[in-house]
Amino acid sequence: MTETGAQTKKAQKLQAPKGVPDYLPPDSVRFVATKRALVEAAELAGYQPAELPVFEDTALYVRGVGESTDIVGKEMYTFPDQGGRSLTLRPEWTAGVVRAVVEHGLDRGQLPVKLWYAGPCFRYERPQSGRYRQFQQMGVEAIGVDDPALDAEVVAVADEGLRRLGLGGYRLEINSLGDETCRPEYRERLLSFLRGLDLDEATRQRAERNPLRVLDDKRPEVKAQLVGAPLLVDCLSDSAKEHFETVLAHLRGLGVEYTLSPKLVRGLDYYTKTTFEFVHPGLGAQSAIGGGGHYDGLVADLGGQQLPGVGFSIGLERTMLALAAEDIKDDGAGAVPVFGVALGSAAKERMTRLAGELRKADIGVDLAYGDRAMKAAMRAADRSGARFVLILGETELASEHAQLKDMRSGEQSAVPLPDVVAELARRIAAEH
Ligand code: HAM
Image (cartoon, rainbow, N blue to C red; front, top):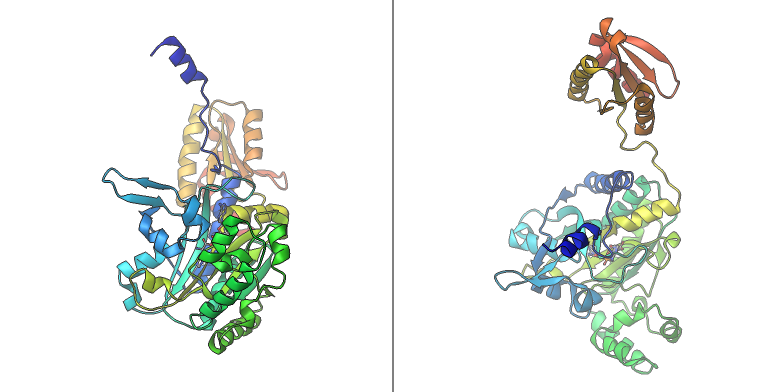
């Protein structure tokens, strides 16, 4: 390497790709706790985990998500592998879940198939607050039974997950996109309405491909023209209407509050009947923390039987932003309850043994490492957030005792070394 080359290499600071967040403590602790709370809500309703590939054949998303969507049109991370296959990093979970369910024949077993998932998705979007190129979704899919009660359950699981986190400032918007008996007729009515508007060429083309998508246009000049647009709720077939009303009745029964949102269409093509979004006003432009809906055709489109499905996905980054907007803190989350400070090599060895015994007894413990003076070690103990500090110096070791300090009350007492594990277990149990 030339000298300048070496210098450049040294000077170059490596950074994560644009729009890709890192999670490190304390945010990472919050992140994991957030995911866990959402998963708990799903497991309480009988959903089981699905672990699926991060990349799939490109054709899956083209067929599953829909060619007219922004995701397929311009946001996918698509690349050829060494064998010349076209692969795409997962932009969303639903298509992959349905692919796996069909591929492994779960759609021929006990129905509904109820799965939860959590993991990264990738979309080449313009990064901004709440919008990233790699982001994480937690979600569920319930596949195989057409029952409005199941749609309501899915919505309620998402709502319960968000409530478990302490969130209360969001709004659930819900709509029905109709079914195959009313959607084609509505599509024609909407299209002829849109053809009469003053729209730019790109929007005009979008209207021809998928007129419903134009209803979701956020630009003021388009929104103003959409005021008199025909709405799907006014055109629903009797069965779609009954389905929707039953979903709403179940939601009322479950105590889930909702707002009817007749122009809600969502950005993916597979939806029919119930669609919904959880919107948080504290998030600015990217206000949807999660969304989902019912899909009648996707399973068959991906080679399975003619079976419906329903699901939601919640964006974990946006959920974290919502927690910040509502000033919900979880102080001390992730901290171990015990911090050990040992002075001198003999005491350090004894402390290492104690730490092993505590961890075997399911008591979390961190230690002061490096040869720090007592004052610096106690500062580290304080920063760790541990409730109890064990102190072991030469004097304590000689008398086979450790000093146990309660960081909340400031009280300190000597505990015989053989009793330390039992004493800490007793005090921690008394906390709960
Ligand atoms: P989606 O609305 O495209 O739906 O995404 C769900 C959530 O993922 C959004 O509400 C948002 O919180 C988060 N999200 C999406 N894009 C980004 C981004 N660029 N940066 C950060 N967060 C983002 C789906 O993906 C459907 N698969 C949901 C579903 C499941 N429908 C039926 N089952």
